[in-house]
Amino acid sequence: MTYAPAERAALSDLFARLGPDSPTLCEGWTTFDLAAHLVLRERRPDAAGGIALAALAGYTAKVQESLKAKHGFEGLVELVRSGPGGFYGLVPGLDETVNTVELFIHHEDVRRAQRVWEPRELPSALEETFWRRVRAGRGLFLRKAPVGVVLHRIGGGVALGGAKDAPRVEVTGPASELLLFCFGRQAHARVDLSGDEAAVARLMDASLGV
Picture (tube, one colour):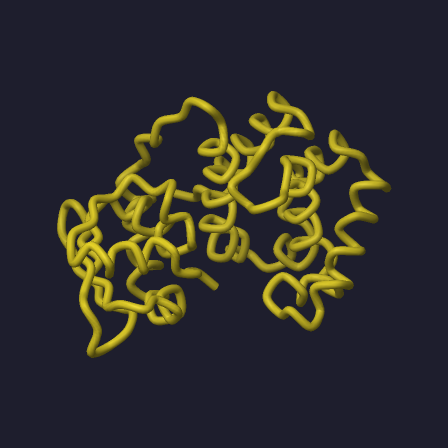
């Protein structure tokens, strides 16, 4: 079963319904900015480096703005919808492997920035996919955590990360919510936290994710 196409279609539908000026959880970005980011990531590999590297961020921002000017919001949404674009569409299976998590997180970035929202009930196989990603990437996602982090997946599974020889915070929830938490959406992830109050506060304020 593949899930990237379903997330892509649902996010595109949501973009079209909300329009270009709706907020997202990506600081400073509207839905217009987020649509441009997704198109840049898939179709402009020359500019994608600035997504992760601060030294290249200026060029990435310029290209992102140029995509907005060239295509407009509706054009960008159609490019997102018609994906995967660029290299992602050339290698069989790459869209599912690389983009399922990216599209899910950004779909939730739009959903959870709205006034009213509730977590979606996701297929169990997709939750399994997210749990594998959490376990495999916890060292990267939690590398800036100032405390130890114990991730408890509802339904079974524990993963450790964060700082060693530091107070531990227990974070419990479905795999999808733990994924969002580990990608820096702590304030919007439906999880339960337990531990020293100061340690919990430090974890909530930490810059998590890639």
